Amino acid sequence: MNRSRTVRFNYAVNTAPARAAIESFEKLGLSEISARGAAQAGFEIPTEIQEKVIPAVAMGHDVIACSETGSGKTASFVLPILDLLDYSSPWIQVVVLVPTRELCPQVAGEFRRLGANQHIRVVEVYGGMSYSGQRKRIANKPQALVGAPGRVLDLLSSGSLNFKKVGVLILDEADRMLDMGFLPQMTEIIKRVPKQRQSLMFSATIPAGVSRFARICLNDPMNILAGKRARPPDEVTQEAIYVPMHEKNARLIETVENEPGTILVFTATKNRADNVYRILKNSGQKACVIHSNLDQNNRKKSIDGFCSGKYRIMVATDVAQRGLDIEGIALVLNYDLPTNPMDYVHRIGRTGRASATGRALSFITVHDINVLRSIEKVTGHTFDNFVPYGKRHERQSPNRRKLG
Image 1 (cartoon, rainbow, N blue to C red):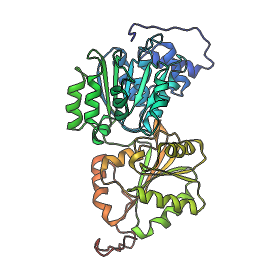
Image 2: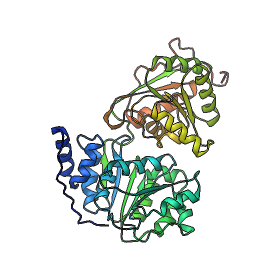
Image 3: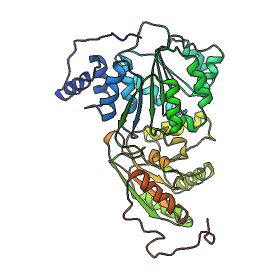
Image 4: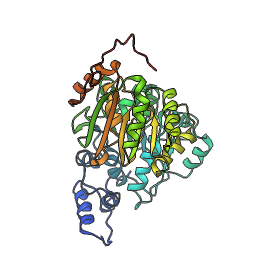
């Protein structure tokens, strides 16, 4: 790692807005080449989390940061790290741990996109892909590694990875990793990283478990809060409508036909995701599905097809609630409302990203009303137009309702 590295290039900037964007990021302590990478990636001015995190990382502080979804958080640590790397070194210098397979290529993609001018070598490792292929990519001597804890630990234990030169460890979406039971793997990985390092932790929430873990792996960290906790972006319009279970499929078709943009549909179970996918496909919609029963190749095909526009609608379980960073999603539809208010926040955070506008619509059954009220308390948003039990107030006993 090279903390004194200063890079200056003499090159023409085509437009005044691009020059202004570069200067706005240089003021945070970035080199001109990294600031230019931000401008080329489409950032016009730093977001709140970037304004707070970039200077802290550039100065070498440990950081624990909490921010809203879609806030530009990944760029907030990638950009200053690009200035710390020794590009002549054959060793891995930065390790980023993420909770899901889907996040690995997306975070690695941000390193490549923002570091295009620096020719960074980055590798992603995660389950569902062959060990031999990942070992070959590791042999190309990357400077940065992005991985899911289980696969990272497997490769460390087999001797395929060596972290003795790692200078920065990043725990991205730490709360999610702990929720998924990765504490033993994360703890073991930390033992394999030098004690003299910079550690960064990012989390959508800071529950007690995250705080305890932070005390183990961070050294006198700066605590950074951007935006309001447990709140979706202001750019997302939130709606909730009462839909009895037996009417959901008809309302689903009506909703997607009235929305011309891209749609992400969340369901409670894998079987229901498959059923909703079939309903959409049979109605003539260009749809795909993603959940944990699919192998990695099929999950990738669904994501790539959704990103490219081959599919207008993706049906997903909560495997995608934090694992997708796709621009331009017009509508997040909760076919099934999640039981945890924070899962609601993360789901609808797939739209309205990076200050774009978006819409979130939730189908509410009689069993969901108490959860909806909990969501209102946690997020501070009131569903003023929601009419319980429909316009006719046809309230039915939960024990007598047909679940269809």
